[in-house]
Length: 277
Image (cartoon, rainbow, N blue to C red):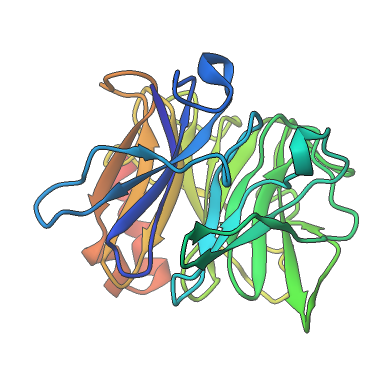
């Protein structure tokens, strides 16, 4: 099947990810993606288990982020009651209870709109960076950011033409300090395959000025499709998906990140460029 969007719990013991076109999804083989869960058993991951109908419906379902204490799960969609047609878009939150995860509560983001068939991005207590086809999108999907101010979210900001192109930019995530942006793109950037992973450095606090994106090179990218790159600085590795040599569509991969996590940003970029050449 197609494994997508791997998100690791803060204690590194639970892996949440989306599986598309699986017969056990809420919508069966036509379902665009449900959330599944795997547990680290000490030497290997357990067989994936469907996360259930509270977190999943017939629409695309995925995890945007997890609170530090692991009790809140932020989700890449809005939910409706009784399978009624959705009238809003955005992210939602489900809270851990004694009997499992609670019914997701929708989070309001002003002027949020996404014409794309699914939403991707990363939730953080202070911001949500995401890819969507929205009001001022340059291509099929652009990358945006919205900030939490007190108890409300701000109107999304397009990250600008240094990041976004006429093509698709998707699956954005940020480093722990919010300075390095990782994203997938099929734009004309000299990539190795259909979608490659790139990194760019935020140059100021406007969130619209970024360094020229750099391809992460053949250690990550291939002739296949690489998506959903997410770094875990404490564990010193990154998770992502690739269709290269996969046993279905996308497979979840892990890459050791100990070197780049300890080097200055400009040094990291120089090393990546050398490997790419």
